[in-house]
Amino acid sequence: MTELKTNKVVTITLNPALDLTGSLDTLNIGAVSLVDKSSFHAAGKGVNVAKVLCDLGAEVTVTGFLGKENPELFHQLFANLNVCDEFIEVEGATRINVKLVESSGRVSDINFPGVAVTAEEIAQFEATLFRLAKTHDYFVLAGSLPRGVTEEQCASWIEQLRNQGKKVLFDSSKSALRAGINSAPWLIKPNDEELSELTQTHLTSPSECQAAAESLSNKGIENIVVSMGAKGVMWLNQGDWLHAEPPLMRVVSTVGAGDTLVAGLCWGHMQKMPKTELLRFATALSAMAVSQVGVGLTSQAELENLKQRTQVAELHPITRLDKN
Image (cartoon, rainbow, N blue to C red; front, side, top):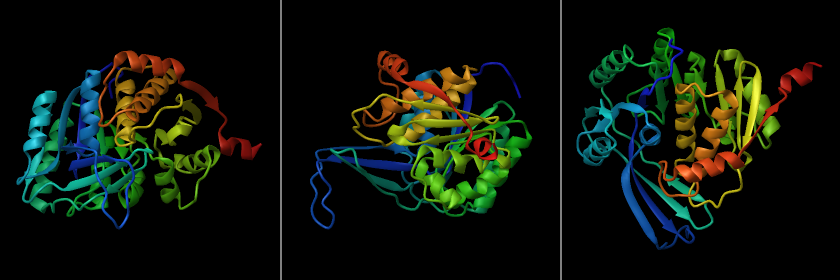
């Protein structure tokens, strides 16, 4: 593993989506709802991370699986971002996900199943992944799994990259996250709901999230980051906790805020930022994301303003207190 700064990173989106996002006053369940504004764009957690990283100045390679029937918006986005496109095209159509954003900030996600991936296509992806591992140290594996890719396969890729000394930032949920953490990814970023599901505990406070995260620390995960919305971000690294609290934001949409946080964490580590500065930067970047529709660094001046207003403090480990 290198200790030098790097701009090179690979983002992996195994189950991307075309996002149909609609903004409306109130969603009327079981009745007609009128959308005020809409957008239709290439997305998926790893794709969102790639876009933010590009805005920050990273040299990004993207890979995963795309349906052959509708790849045009993805290829157009990748060309606009000037990223290296290493996606594997497979039979079928990339899914369309619907996100309905109400004026209150509440978001309703309707996520459809993705393409079905064959063993031959998986082998092609694996060959691409480990070829990229020869020239890259940072890998962001984000999002859900398509049909045909098992949780065990995903965990195996994490383990193989880790054994090669690669830093894998893993952001998934449900059974994929549960299997993946056993392969000791370098960083995970569950939100409070995902952490609750992972530990099978209803977590309602930052201290409860702390204790739940500490219960995972024996799995060899170097960085455990917990995002808690307006309550901020907590980061456990080598037994030490930091907590960042952003300023109160006017929420336009929370879509992509978690992906933006992952991008900020990745960029901060790639640039070898000091820990406090890194967490402040990533938290402010994520806070800026909720004030806009879509992901991306829209204003460097606004980011600097938010960084100055984001508070970072050390926290006492919960389990250490329990032992005293």
